[in-house]
Image 1 (cartoon, rainbow, N blue to C red):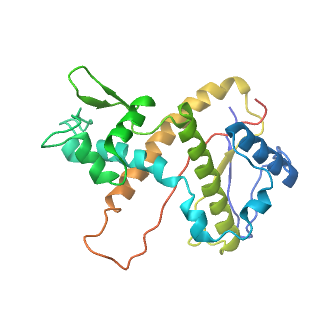
Image 2: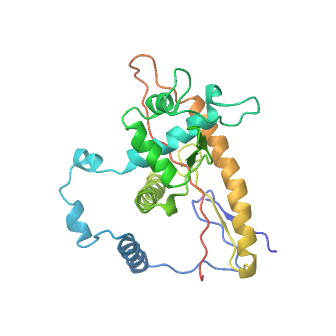
Image 3: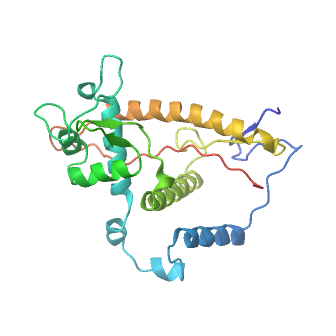
Length: 250
C-alpha cells in the first residue's frame, strides 16, 4: 500500500503534492452544483441562495441556527461518560433511573442541557438507539457519539454544522498569517492511486483512530469548559473538531 501524502502548507503557503499524482480538478460550478444537490437531497429549499442571505443581520441568523439541539444531546452523552458520579469502578457509564434522589437522568439533563425537557431528550436518545430502558426502569447508555445519519433531523443538523465549520476554518486560514500560531489546524492525507477494495479496511482504521482522537480532545476540552461560578471576562467560544473520509469515484 502506498503511503498517503500529507498535504501541508509550505513556507510560501503552497500545498506540497507528490508529482506522481494530481488532485481532481474542481471548479466553482462543481462546488455550487454539489451543494445544491446536497440541499435537495436533504429536502431543503436552496433556491435563490444569494437572495436568502442578503440584508440578513447576524442576530437574525443566530436565532435560526440549528446548533443547540444537536450539541445538547452530545453534551449529555459526554457527561454520562465522564462524570465520576455516573461511572462504575471500571470507568464505564452506570445505568440510571429517570428520577432518583441521587444520580438520575433528570439530574444529568438538568446539569448539562437545562433548557431541554428531560423526557423529550430521553425519547430522542431512545429513538436513535443511544439508550435503552430495561423492564425495571433503568436507562442504559450504549454510545458516546451519535449515529446522526439514522435520524433525518439530526442528519440535517450535522451536515449543516459540518459544512459551516469547515468553511469557517478555510476562510480563517485564508485571511490569517500562514504561521502555525495563526492558522487553525487543517491537514489532509491524500492518495491518488488507492486500491478500492481496501476502502472497507480504511473505514475501520479511520473509525477506530478517529474516535479515539476525538474522545481524547473532547475529554481535554471538557475539563477546561466548566462554566465560571460568576460572570467572567474571558471570552467563551464554540469549538468543532471533525474527522471525515472522502472517496472520489464510488
